[in-house]
Length: 521
Image (cartoon, rainbow, N blue to C red; front, side):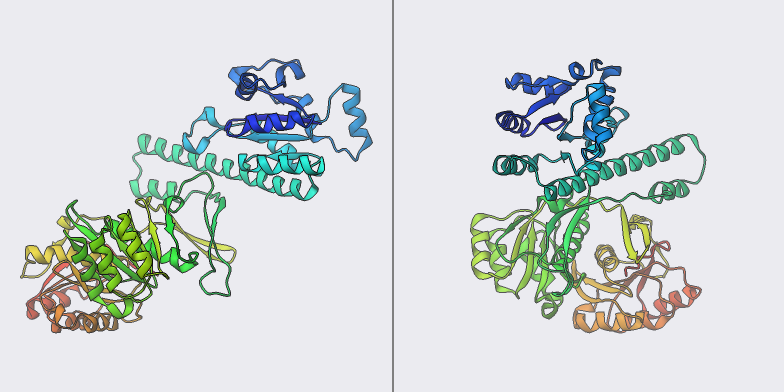
């Protein structure tokens, strides 16, 4: 039995090679893998010695040879294949162990692997007779099976072949995306074309090759009768990969979905390093958010927005959880998930004992979102992720009354909270604290009524944001009648003049965000 070993990632390769050698396998290797085996004192034959053709073109050509691919691709059930190999003096290869250059980590022409994918695909195609291993995590299982049964079962070979094709598919997808990015960069340097058109070409190319790899199981999907799992884009790293869970049940689909929303909002809210944010999310919408220099105060203010809705929600803490923060959370309503960058040991022990049903997560900062996908059967809607385009300093005050400095600060917070709330959305913020959020309404007036209903007297002197323009003055008047003193909205309605006049009459400041809308469905 012969095995061909040619890997970039040499994790575990010495142990695998030694185990195969002890089982009587003949080993073939090339390049850096051969050097590693030589250094470990493991007998093998180099590819160049087997083929009689030295490596050439700086290593670009070494395994692309009939002696290699004939030995891999021969169908053992066809006598003419075996006769052809015998006539040419080509031996069979029964196991191919190969992983590819790490293109995703450092994309370049030189890291586009040719020989590796060719061997992997050849072995995977011929999995009825040949086993292929692309993941070092499979080495031990392969050795165990060989030691126990003397061969690798067809079931295992099929599983490994599927994994191999997924490996090369993800590799090719990463190359396509890199080439799209290079083309976009070249056009940006050489063309006078509109920048937005170039951005669209980069974000929405002619084809998108999305390869996903399973990154972890979920307790269930959106509902208990649905299955769910978390996947990541092959070859890419997600902040979720570095999340640590301290006890509690396995996360469900909605736990992950809502925790992601909460964690991103906590990182978006602060406008200076001295501001610490807390966000509470329920059903993907903020039911509380606040900024303060003290995390205990920020948590209490976020909770006070809507303590009833906060029950069973996600609490995102934008700083290290100390004992004082833990005691405040433990005194509050039950949360499904608490997520923070870190916990003091005593704080973790306190929350673990007081909130046994709560999943406690520590997490790094989230990576930026680039594209969003929404599957509609065989059709897919693709868009670049909603982001804040204009700095608030560029917003225009449309009314006679100007916002105060405190109102400007609240307008900025309300704008961010509102943008991350399901449309139609209204958010009211007073003194750095969200006090009322109206989410997911068909009518903007009703969204405003819900927001002021939750805010009560706290709306007085506060600032409000609307995720889209007010089509009529009625929604604006709901806010004005509740005592809101400043409002930010995109503007752009044919009735803007009517809205401005109504705001002036009510004595409130109205700011236009330059037409920047933040619908969220």
